[in-house]
Length: 216
Image (cartoon, rainbow, N blue to C red):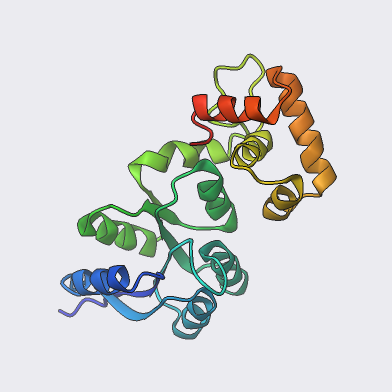
């Protein structure tokens, strides 16, 4: 009896990795990569042309990012199953992908057997997350930053996002664009963070963020 394979569209900007994944998955007769690309815009086109069982997206893609590609696909085809495969395992990136509607998130470095299992689980309506980000997936819905549990008055989810980006050197305008806020709102968040932590310099916020795992 023939089993219908799980069809996959794969988007990753590293050719060697993309070809390696295709070759390894081809050994699994339950999964078939029907199309692949290194471009975010093309990934959207392929997904909406072929309507595969699962779309695998890297975050860092030329054209548009994997997260923007995810948003476009979900807007046009809300039921399409999306699995993110990325080297990024920070809270903000994972949260953005989850909020955009991804059904699974794997951190690059996983073995092909785990990738295969994730594809199969996502294809049948499940979710799959790498072990190192499972806590983030749970925290996204809680509204609290997962790093700041040591505080008497924990940072909110949004404040945690702002703090991470401040610590990484982004300006208020850049943060506003990334988080879809106004620069004034970002400045207000930053002021509240400083008051709550009793830290009143950017350098101090950077040290706090690194010490508490919010930034590296």
